[in-house]
Image (cartoon, rainbow, N blue to C red; front, side):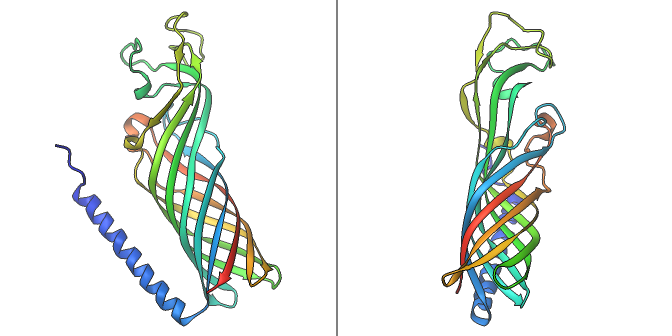
Length: 258
C-alpha cells in the first residue's frame, strides 16, 4: 500500500502549523497594542511559467486569471507597515500551436522507442495556490498615499489541471513536416488532473507599488504586485523539466482600521 505521507513531509506540515499559530498569536498581540488595518482585495493576475529545462517545460506564455484575498497591515512607524494576509491566486501558463506531447498524451499512439512526438493544439496549465505573503511597506504623502512594498511569500497548491483542445496530425519532428500517418487526426479536447506532476509547496519573492485613496472611513487600494518564484514546481524534473512560477497582479481593494 502507498504511504500517504512521509516523515519529512509530516515535519514540514508541523513546522507550518507552528509558524501559523505563532503568527496568529503575534497578530493578536499587535492588534491589542498598535494600529492595524484590514483589507479585502482582488483583481487580475497575469501569471507565467518561467524557466524550462526541456521541450516539455519550455514555450509557455502568460494566461489571464483572477485572484482575491484579505490582508492585515501593522504600523511600525509613521511611514512603515508590516503586511501579511491570505491570497487565493490562480497561476500557470499557456502554450498553443506545435508542441511536444507529454507522457500522458501518448497513450494509444504508435510511439517509436526514444522518440518525442509533436502536435498542433491549445494547452493551458492552471495552478491554484493559497499564498501567505510577508512584506515591508513604505508609504509617503497624505491624500493619496503612495507606497512601495517588498518581501517573501509561501504558497500551497490546492488545484492543478491542464485544459487542451484541438485536433491534429502527429509528427515525428519539431518542425511539423513528418507525420506518423497522414490520415491519423487525433483529438486533444480534454481536462486532465496533473496534481501528481506538481509539487504542493511553492515560495518566492514579491514586490509592488501603488496608492491609497481616502474614501469614507477607509481607503481604496490601487496597485500592482510582482511575484518571482524561487522553487521548481515540477515533481518529476527528470521527465517534464523544471519550471518556476511568476507573474504580475493588478489590485483593487478597500481597507479600514480595526
